[in-house]
Image 1 (spheres, one colour):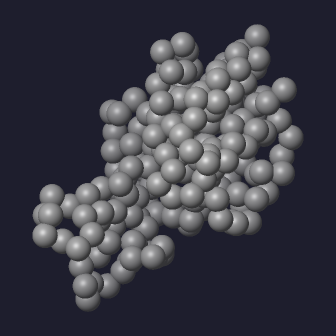
Image 2 (image 1 turned 90 degrees about the vertical axis):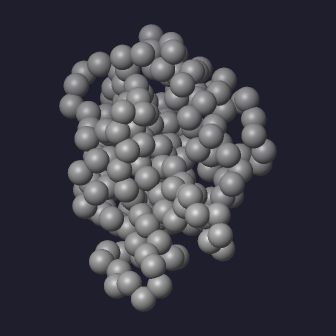
Length: 188
């Protein structure tokens, strides 16, 4: 039986979009059993900038909360936190806002969406510990996105039993069917 689903693929292939669509479909079927977050790009309103993306936010699945994950700092500004490419990660904001969205301590079957388990998020040791705890829970179905490139922590997750990993080559409806089937089996 598949218990968790990891969506992987190159940047821009549609992992987050598919994850959102899956979560919406599952939320329609199981409205009180889904929680978690998406990671969304934050774009500048100033179109004269060379690149309009200025960072990333964590957004609750229910769209009720949004918080900073990382931002590109102006040239010459001092980074106060770990960096991934041109982005400085706000670990404190991430932990304060994302961790409550993926907390679980009950005994009811719950779907938890984590978009994504990537370099930025993994600067949080508390996040890593929480993800491991969720993977070990008997009552949690995880729907996660992970980068296609090798990250040791993500590689350790991919080797677990009861996990299905789908590498997106192109946008597909197969993942939606797989996620629905996985959760239906667990919910019986």
